[in-house]
Image (cartoon, rainbow, N blue to C red; front, side, top):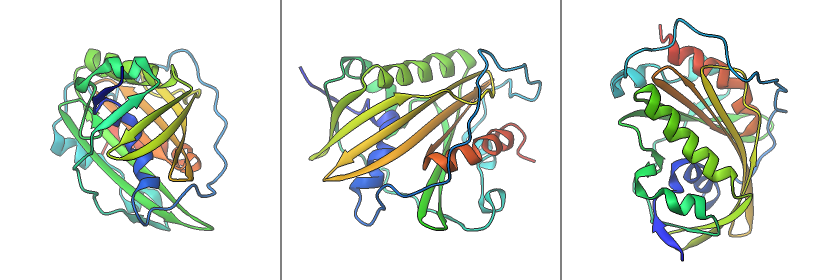
Length: 232
């Protein structure tokens, strides 16, 4: 039986929004991803945050245009209203229930997000989300959602009245932080497809998620983590 909830919004609505909103670009060429070799565990980092950060503190740790370099423009914030999402063909996602996500973001109490468009040979986008909670909750909550998504190589979601085909592939994440996850999503809706990469790095009580154009995710995940750990 299909279950209607906001579960899949946790990490997929960013990808879905790219190709379902009028005026948004479809998949665009992006810089070639950097090849990395991940180790089972990253080395201990004494700079990692040891207490839960507030939303205001997280906002100070977001990337800005100066951090990214030339050619980047901040995207306007999109309407936070979300349509219901129906998951079809992925029992692991259906079982997560509404507690897995809130309004298209991971369900952690303190959060901040931003996004940018890069204009080069083609328009590409990169988004960053920061979350803070206890180490245990960040670890278990993020792992649960990533594991559920990659457990179903192909499934479908219906966002409002829009059917969307999802294809997921687990990737090796860069050897950063205490824990890391990465996946490649191919999202097809209304005859258009977009390839979106999502990489999440947990360091202490901080979770950094960088999404969208695969090449830009690889380019900026290191500096996104560095600024999140040491904003000044």
